[in-house]
Length: 343
Image (cartoon, rainbow, N blue to C red; front, top):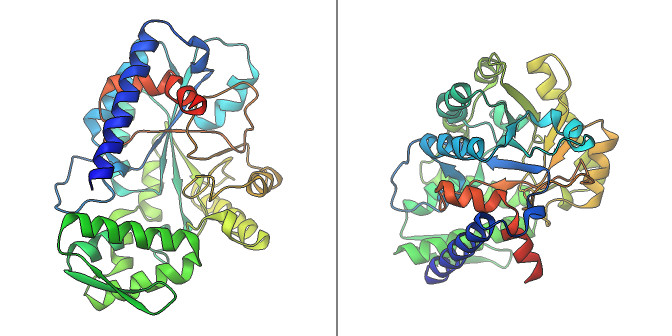
């Protein structure tokens, strides 16, 4: 827990420094051609004692403040599928692109009205298994499971280990250890174990999926908004780089087909689940291109360059721990990412 607090202090200090440098006109080139922003939940803050996913949510007020800040800084707002045209142009004005992963219900309830008021286009990436209630959001299930228990028996492949959960530090350590196990081994088997343990405690993992994410009817309502578009986000939300090539191809192609059945045309955009280096390799970017996707996005941080590979674009996370417009300016400046690379 202390390490996490220290990390946030370090990040905050870096953002403050980047903001000051940006305001002074230093490293102007770091801003590049603009930025793609990553969001997940957009909703009023829900207080809970154990909240390991707090970084995945921002408030509607902060979203609106972010947009207003970027407007003041002369950003032009475009849809994600219009980005290739911008990058191919000589337009010097930077662009801001908004994307939301996983298709949460609050994207329709709270985010869409903000985008409508500000006339800003946005893309929601949806997972087929969440739409059809066949797959679970393991990070949400695991948070509920750990929050409600004083200990947890979990098999990390060598027999059951008892994880103490008597305080917040122990709960966070258990969450992190299980999350690492999910990412390092067979994701499907590890998630199935989390689901079984949750069900044994009266927690319904698929019920969580239904409660939190939009089904087909909700997504059809969402895209009635001319500013909204849907993109593919696989079927099972597994790290594609850890799958066989055949599995990865199917995850992308089936997701594209699932979205097409909702909107009546093939989506041109894709977000790789997790989007970090462990989850996306050069193979996935080639698959996305071969399957006809015009744009595919990671969660690897950075601003946009004219020569950016359009099936491996970086994004900037709007993180629940850093909800200040000044931090948005610092991130959009690109200075923080340049400093990270130099470090």
